[in-house]
Length: 296
Image (tube, rainbow, N blue to C red; front, side, top):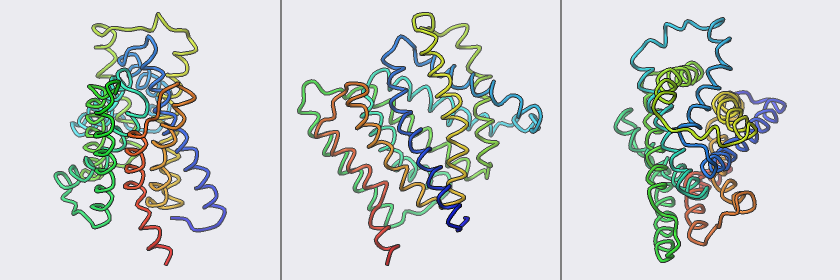
């Protein structure tokens, strides 16, 4: 980790940019879900665009034979197709705030479980406290929202929780198999495209003809370039300059930012129940008591 003042300021700029992309992912994906695009369209645009952009680098700089490995196929199914398809189906069924809570809020639970099952990680006191805050927030949200006859709880939330589990398994396997993040990300995009695009073209419904080229360009550019490629690179660069704890603390604010922006941008409500869920989730992920201990 680099400690010079200049590199730290660069690191903060990188993490703020990454935070903006992560928060925007929830909003842009919900926009796709509310349009005529199917979840399969958005998945195809994500991996098809990423593969096209990465192709020159792959041909010139990489040995493509490394992707002919069953481990790459497994991580592509989990961190690529599994995560993307479940998340995009969720965004077609549930509001952005639900995505912020269930997609990100369940991630610490799944990460702890997958870490224990796959990597044999032990639970620390800070993690137990963080999970307790998240559980309290989600429990309070569920209790309040279930009293509302117009609540949006349903299959969309199940899809978000499944996407979160798929991503947690992906990250745990990356750690267990010691796969470098950049080649793994490229491999996930390429293998996902190779596996999915033929099935999509032949069998899955599409709404591409029902939306404007601007909508298609927005989803292709954002999902395939900003999310898959650029945000991954800025995240890694930020961690190198600031450390995983500082970067993770900043990015824990992404769901709260996305849910708040969904009110004016998507005209979606932010109820007291959802606010409690977000507060518990952000507190559990941010773990402010660690900052207090660190500052002493």
